[in-house]
Length: 377
Image (cartoon, rainbow, N blue to C red; front, side):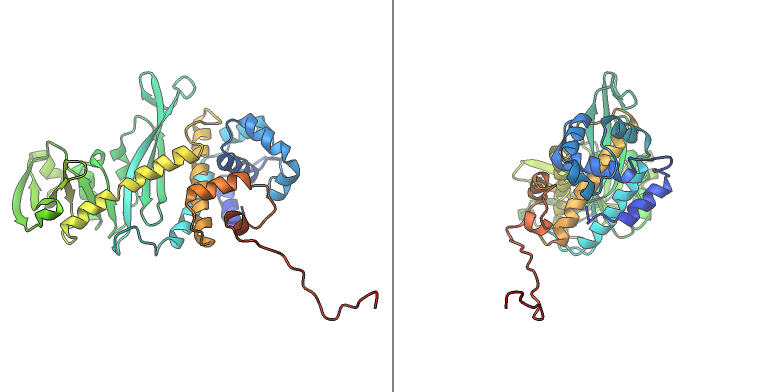
């Protein structure tokens, strides 16, 4: 927990008056309790209460000053503003992105590369009536913009299941010069043109009914799998009205999947094969969603209110980013999964974190002073 910026956390709490009229169980106690639940994969609020009360002597030294109670924690998750933990997660994300800014993601590009996608978290509609999705099914969607350098989620939005993915393009801040990789669900020409006008680039896939007018073609090496590299304009009144500029259309045949893929981009300087490889890197956001669903607690929730669900998801994201920060600052070679597994069984051990996460034997030696007199001489 020493890797957490405590001053920034207090600022987030004061911004939303999280500790207003709170006597014993502060927002910091709530965050630590929920972080403990994420790191050790606790099943319920009663499970959290039982485990933390069993280690009462150690929880005080870990920073939890309030009395751990199931009702108190449930009330805190329901009442205290989830934006406290969303803003704090952004502070951790800012710190992590600075640490991973120089990392490579498999391609030598100077631009920042983002992957944009969403994952659906199924919920019971009778317990979560606010999370409307279908007639007899509830769900929330976690929309994430992932920085491929370090796989750090830069922006996340939590909505009910009915909100379509393409609407998130209206909310994300557009960074000039960056490249945004998206699947076909984000193919909206008006929103893509907004990206183009903001001096940003996008790479996406064309739909099967894509209608276009070819202006000219460029040479490609067909032995690499490339089939064509064309400059096109959209065909159709409304499509051309939404995106009046030229587009680049690249067709590629994937021999492993035996599938023909057609990509659309507004970047005309990158080699055609690099564009196809960029889209392949979009798979990292799918792996990110799979990782947090498997190793963090975001599929089963401790509360049924919207505030409780968003609080739990944002604290889970904070723990993911915190583990990434620890890995970078301690220069660890283990994967995030390995670090998380070690932390889950050593949370209350009194040992240096580096020793717990590596095979290094850290010994504390007492300094011997030369001017100390010997009593028995």
